[in-house]
Image (cartoon, rainbow, N blue to C red; front, side, top):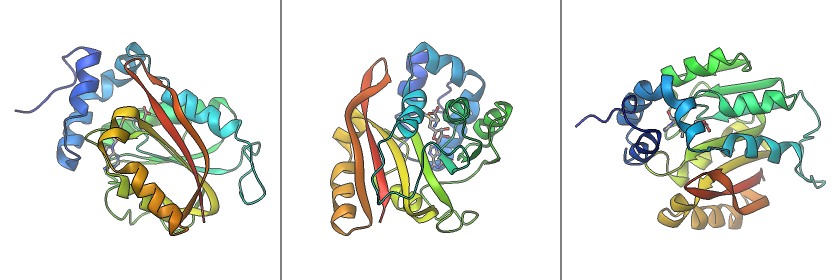
Length: 223
Ligand SMILES: C[S@@+](CC[C@H](N)C(=O)[O-])C[C@H]1O[C@@H](n2cnc3c(N)ncnc32)[C@H](O)[C@@H]1O
């Protein structure tokens, strides 16, 4: 049965999105249907992840290894799984001007365009595959909010974010509590740290995310 997000309650729309098994064609179809109503639905569920993750960048204490100055509005930022652009809007409100975004759903990326805050936007980009339009080492900061979540992308997709982020650049990721509990995200990241692929520079164990539950916020430096 095809699930529709447009005609159910905001709670059901969020919950149904978690049952899509990381299947690209189902995710695309689901978010195509949800794009018009997404912002209202997640507002209704007190979704605060985008504001929190943008603020985390702005106020991050930086050590000498990190090659990013959060005070610099000109840093190049990639919003991975940008959806309708809620993260981009928060980043722009904090003064950042060079924000690129992509999403697997063209309709969600089209909605993000309406926010008028992105330098470039692409739809039909799948984070679970090599993203051929994105060269290595391009971004000072990569942000992904609400994407490492149930039924969406596996922990391994972090490697593609590492690839496109500059050495000593930063990656910000939210993982809602239930995703962390049910996936191997923590052990996968532990392995990447042991291999010195990334270094965890900041961690929030239970930050605000959505009314139902909180999330972990991870800030990795690309080693
Ligand atoms: C819960 S929404 C979060 C959107 C936005 N980041 C926010 O915080 O509002 C999840 C987004 O991930 C996108 N997505 C899911 N799987 C993806 C994949 N494999 N590659 C790229 N985007 C994906 C969906 O299309 C959707 O826009």
